[in-house]
Each structure stands twice: as structure tokens, then as C-alpha cells.
Length: 282
Image (cartoon, rainbow, N blue to C red; front, side, top):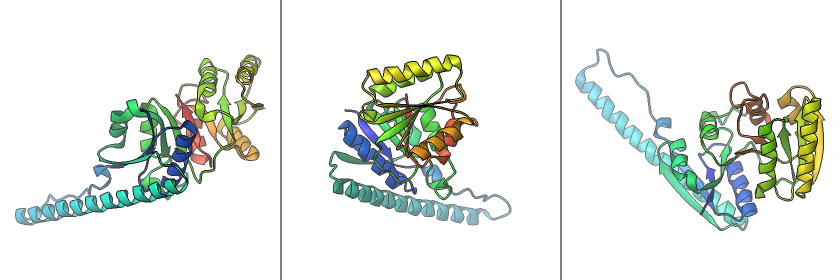
């Protein structure tokens, strides 16, 4: 059975990830797995032991480092278990019980690839422990995950509230028209008002935009249309904030100025500055 997988790592976004994933699991009537991956590379200590120091002293220091690493690993393991238990308890308090905890050693991306066939929706914070003090940072793990994992991805960006509506970013391309079709067929968006938004329209794009809005309405979606001007990411974020929309929906990545990912892209800027979750649709 496919699961909702929530990536938990102890960063400040962990509670937001858990809340978002519980809402997702309830909405989709799917089981939820809280996943905590212990990445050894995050704990490794880089230290230079070469030079004129004696062989015996080097061996002694290396042994101390090994022991220290083992202690750090045990502490990290206990911390991860405590975090999972805490988030599980809060989920149970909310009435959700179809929940599992999983703790693994290794690399996050490799772990997710091993689990990919069982992932329905992946929920992850916009940054991890290393960047949790910087609210304007996007984690390198997120970039790797979005580029690789083929399931829908929800990015937690802050405190979560169940959305009543969402912004669907449209640019008139064939890919974005497919995005509209996928949004129609995504149960996660059922019953929510769609604000279909396009930035810097042209006559050709306006026709595609009107067609996309009509297609959404034909499938029973309540649609609000908005054609905006200005910088793509700024226009989208300003519109979302002004209308207090609960989620932003975009394609995961591509080549147009709206769909590029992590190369000076608008998607990156939106993730950095958004205060609501982003649903990146495959």
C-alpha cells in the first residue's frame, strides 16, 4: 500500500512537516509514515592528524575520535526516537491513528529511492537542521529530492493551517496545461477553490489560460482567474498573500521561466519566501 512519507530530521520544520503530512493522510485516507534518517556524514568530524605528531599519539587521538563518533551516533539515535514519539503523540491527539514510525541509517535520498514504489506523497521541510536558523535558505537535500523522486512533493514552509484554497501557477505552455489536468485528478485538491494565476500574459497565452480555466470548471472546480504582471515569483507571492491562499501548486521543474528549478529559478524564490506549503506536482 502506498504511504504518505514525512521526512523528519529535528529541524524547526519538523512539526510543520508532521502537521502537513497528517492533513494529507487524512485527506487521502492513506497511512502515514514518519521517517527519520540518520545521515552519518552530518556527524563526521574533519580533522587533520598528519604532521610531526608521534604515531602512538595519532592512534590514541583516532581512537578517541571513534569513541566520540559512537557517542554522538547514540545521542542522535535517542534524539530521533524521542522526536518521532513526540510527533506521533501529537498526531494521535488529533485523532489520526494510521501512523507508523521508521528510523534508518544512511543517506536520505537513497533511502527514499528504496521506498519510492510505496510513496504516494512525500512531505519535506524546505530546509533541514543545518539551515534551520536561516528562514531564507533552501536545503540541499530538498533540491536532490525534488530532482529525483517521482511522486508529488509537499514542501512545508512554516506553521501549517488546513487550506481552503490554492494558487495554481500557469504559464500557457503545454507542460502547464498538463499540470492543470493533474491538479484536477489530484484528490488532495478536491473541494478547494483554485486561483488560476498567470504572469505576463500574451494573446496566445490568454487563449490557453481561458481554456485551462474552463477545463477546471468543467470538472467541478471553483475557479478564480488572475492575470498578473511583474516579476513572476513576486507577483505570485504578493497575490497569494493578499488573498490569503492556503497553498501554492506548481510543476516540480522544467525549462520555462516559471518552471525552472534551482538555477536562479522562480520556484526556488517562491519556496524561500512562501509562508504556505507548496505542492510540486509530477
